[in-house]
Image (cartoon, rainbow, N blue to C red; front, side, top):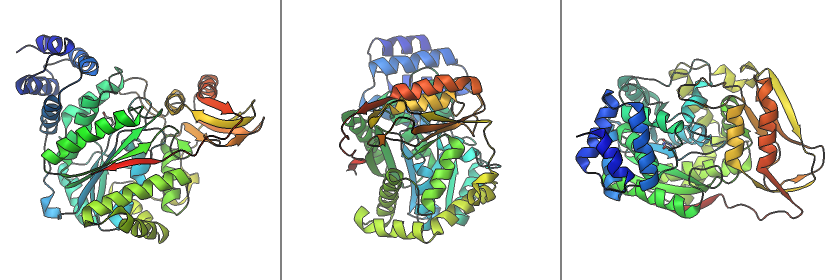
Length: 433
Ligand code: URA
């Protein structure tokens, strides 16, 4: 079998056999297939798509590319959650400790930033000392002890996704339903949790731009997960406007902590409460409506925040920064972006704002680039807000002074103004389970 022939077959719209898909995954992981052929393969899949059978084969091959955890001994309430990505999406930092505080066993493998979207692993690493790489034994024993661990693709878990994810990030091959579905579900299957809740984002800041595309992706992932014996829930959420106010790693940790302390922006709180309710409902076999008051209770009584601190401590992180944000490192430059227009913000291009945060240093331009955890954007005005000339639209944080004009222009170009207030955005479109 030759990789060249597999790329050509997919480029020309052919359906790959299970053996061909396994050949690609095994060869890419063992290094016999180079990055340039894997990039061409991903681009061929991007344009030609994959059948449901091919997507399932790719997912299973990726899941089996490394160890597969068996969490059965931890009971029947193991739960994992994953987002298809967004701008300002710090939901995991809130819902994982909430679910753990409610008695769910949260064993989660997260990803790094991808394209214009941020990643939970980068956000966690912005907490000084936090270790995202645990051995399977350490992961397992932490979950057993305190009921929660969030790690990166550590040890030998889904090495195929670890390599492909970083490659897709820099080769414009992220926005493909089979590639996203296989990336996410392979991690979830290898992570071993029985219950899986997927946040499938849609809109300008998401990889799926329309509810129809998001629903197709959600259905593909739910099907594969169910076939593998997992209890699946998917929720389609709005990502037309960045979620919350803060974009950037330290900034997002701070905002997640605010939600866990009972505050934070309303859109973020609503989405977090909904997803945490779905996690609890799946584990305890009740409805989301029955779960919601319990979720609100552990936020209000502080036990969810204590769970976050327990996890940070167990993974070597400095919990003091969570109580006192002034202990986080500070960026060299803080710049207030003022409005020269008056009106109501009628639309925001969330993807462009995500890219502006990457320009400021909060994300990667190239595979393996370092991240400046301090960099980012606070959006003081969002869709629906009235703006007067001279109002601060956003605050930009960076060490890269020369990037400020470019980021400023990108943010200004991403905003549309109107005389009329737009209709309120729907945050939760649909739940599929
Ligand atoms: N999240 C993932 O883990 N993989 C993707 O491909 C997109 C979002």
